[in-house]
Image (tube, rainbow, N blue to C red; front, side, top):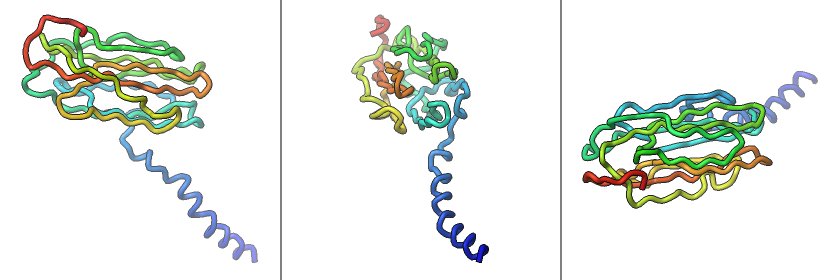
Length: 193
């Protein structure tokens, strides 16, 4: 009788357990584990074009992150200088646009258990004498705190120049608005438009 009961339990509970542990988000090519710092840089001459994240309250109110890069258009030339720009403090709101008209070509982050949040810093690259125009901010990514987030540049020829992020001390999560711009095909003398 106990073998029959055990078999019945496995038949009923087995699929439920499999559904619980078979989450699609495990196969997304994440660059970090929960509560782990990371440093991601695109290959030289490429910039970020897509960002994806997955939130887990059980894992320290942290997110897994995935980034995609793409070569810049030939007319933009090659980056003449790259650097790590401003850093934010964990638990604080943050707004950062690459200085010197730079484009985001990488991200680094460190997790802080004490505030259940991360510090962030963008890796920026300068394309000599090119200027941003037609800049805009995306809507909130994710739409609501604690949801999966995904942002892809709207089309080829748009670039991520920075982001503005808000932090909820109650929900222990961030929402992002990415700053997206086009770049001139001609030389210009302006900086930080």
